Length: 467
Image (cartoon, rainbow, N blue to C red; front, side, top):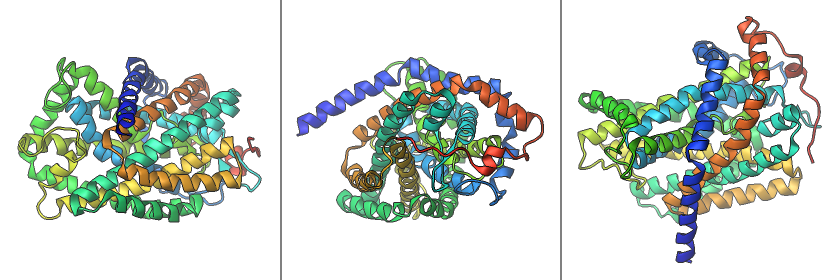
């Protein structure tokens, strides 16, 4: 059994390295850059976007309020990718990985806007008047390519098990074991029960939990980061310099494997950047499509505020780790053992490790909830039966247990590989439908008609139930 596990891990690592080679990195970053310039740097409307986040209009068609949809999306994106993911990126690619994480996020805001806009434009409603959407419906309704829509759902179902489930439960088990010496077996059982209890209630139950928990957990984690940066304030300038220098260095520096630093930093930084903000992956648009909104552009703007939030958290995590390494190189060693971030937080006297444990637990639990909905919608598109949905809920809770008792490297390799699979059909559809995105933006944003109603958003789109 051990030999099989080692062989599986070896092949998975090779497949991950191949998939996340230059072609996919160029495709993803190229899409981010294309939409950034094609939409006249849509990121400059960030203030307007945050204003839309807090507005509410229950008269519109949709399942949940815009903020609730954003909360579920943030629950999925603000998770271990922003904490453990950034740490592993630094350990494997060097401090320069933080720079590429940031770049992926900044330019990825344009892609997140585009994919969320399309998700609302092409969303549908079922016979129960519930709204559904996401890249599979965008591909089906916008391109008429049902085969590629199904392909996205297959890849999405795989990614749900890796990114949304295994990684999260593994992160919880690791931090709980280190902090409280609780067996991963016990942690896995507790996590499975908690997740199962919430997902029984569907989207409304998930949204309610995320709406209350996401703001609180984010504030708690950011407060801890701020305290650590104050403690290590004399190293902040050097940390920024090291991050930028390592991002373009021909050789790996201060962590990372031996070899060419630039490619390693870019590879792990972009991969973890995608994992943390999900721009271009197509996951968040699945819940963005359910929001009550006047027109697709408004929800596109609301959605990309989530990417901005992940940029802030990733940057602060990176600064905490790099400055902590410079302050205490003997204690904060840049190695990929899953405990790098915790070593940094232990520099915060008395409460540091407990604060991080709570943050990771809350981040990971809410991510498990958000990604459950993504997977459920992918399954619904392919097999829309009550029995299939119930079986999926049972399997999802069992997978959460397996992630808790699994090994870190294999779990992360599986997550990276599954993320890359989702990117391909989603990004291709984004590029093919760019004229639609530009047209909608021109109609509502550039012409100053952001408060106007799109009739299809108000009354709901056509009824459709894919078989």
